[in-house]
Length: 86
Image (tube, rainbow, N blue to C red; front, side):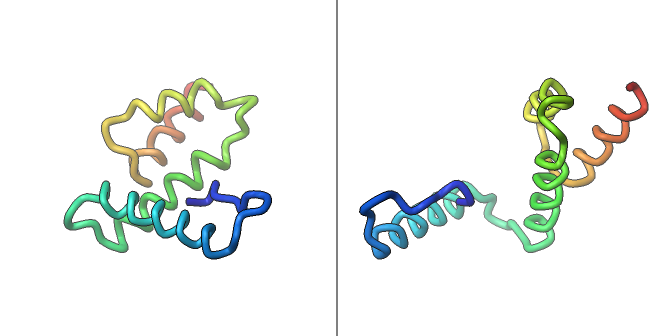
């Protein structure tokens, strides 16, 4: 969703439609009982991952994408383990 940018010559109504379509796609892939706490955890995990400089952490962040579950506690634990091994 955050990568959507208004295209040159695109109408605002078309932009709104693209955002709504992307949002519906997100909702369709969300687990049935997804909560606001789950969203908070996901946002915190994404923030931690994006905060790592790619020049230093690219291999590590690639490994994170292979985890069976990506939530705040899992990412936090992985980052702390990474820090201890550096």
